[in-house]
Amino acid sequence: MYVSSKVSKARSMNLARIIGVQLVGCHEGYLGLLSFVRKNKKHLFTSIRDGVCDKIKGWQCKLFSVGGKEVLLKVVLQAISAYSMSLFRLLKGLIDDLHRLSARFWSENYARLSVGSVNMLDSVSWCPPDTGIFKMITDAEMDVTNGKVSLGIIIRDCDGCVMASSVQPLSCRVSAQVAEALAMLKGLNFAIEFGLVPCTLESDTKVIVDLVNVNTVPCSDVGLIIGDICNFLITHPGCIIVFASIRANKVSHSLAQLGLNYDCNRFWMEKVPQYAVPVVLGDCPSLL
Image (cartoon, rainbow, N blue to C red):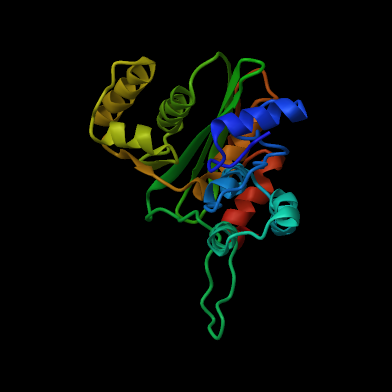
C-alpha cells in the first residue's frame, strides 16, 4: 500500500497493519508502465521514445523495400505506443517526437516529390568517382554466435560499372572496428593486386577513417591494422580513404552478408554475385 506524504507515518503504519498489507514507498511498474503517476509524466513515457529509437536504428542497417519500410512504420512503430495510449493521453511533445523520428527515417531512405515542385530527395547515395579513378567500398558483417566474420568488397568505375568484387570470410572473434579495418586493408590489397588504381576507398566507419587520415595509431588490436593501412597509403599515394554514409555501401553490405555462407574467399571480375545484382542496379539505374 502507498499513502500520500501528507499522512503521518504512524497513521499509515497503523492503517497498513489493520488492512494486512505491506507499506511501500512506491509501486513497481507493470507491463512497462509505472503504476503510480506523478504530475510530471515525461519520465513515464521515456521507454516509448527509446523503443522507437532502438527500432529505427536497427532498421537503418537493413535493406528493406519501400513497402516493407511502410509496414514497419505503420504497424511496428505504432504498436509500441498502443498499450500506453489505451491508458494515458500521450504528451503532445512526445507525439511530435515520434512523428519527427518516423518522418526523418522515411525521408532519409526514399525519394519523394516535394509539394508544388519537381525537386526530389535522391535515395541513391552512391556517387561515381572522377574519370580515371576507381571507387571501392568495403564493409564487414559478423556472426558472433558462430565466431565468423565476412568482408565485402566492390570496386566500380566512373560509369558505375562493376570492375571487381569479393567476399572474404574469416573464422575469428574480433570487435566491429577490427572487422571494418580488416575489410579496408583487404580491399586496398585487392585493388593493387588487380591493378584497379588510383582508387578512393569509402567506409561508413568514421572512427577508423578519421584515425587513418590523421595517421594516429592507437595502442590496441585495431591499431595494428590501422598502422598497416597508413603504411599502405604512404607507399601507394594514388589511394585515399574517405567516410561515406551507410546508405552508400549497400552493395558491400550485401556482399558481406553473403560471405557468411561461404567457407573460402570468392572473387568476381566485372560482376557481382546474383544476390547483389538488384542492389547494384538500385545504386546505378543507368546500368539497366
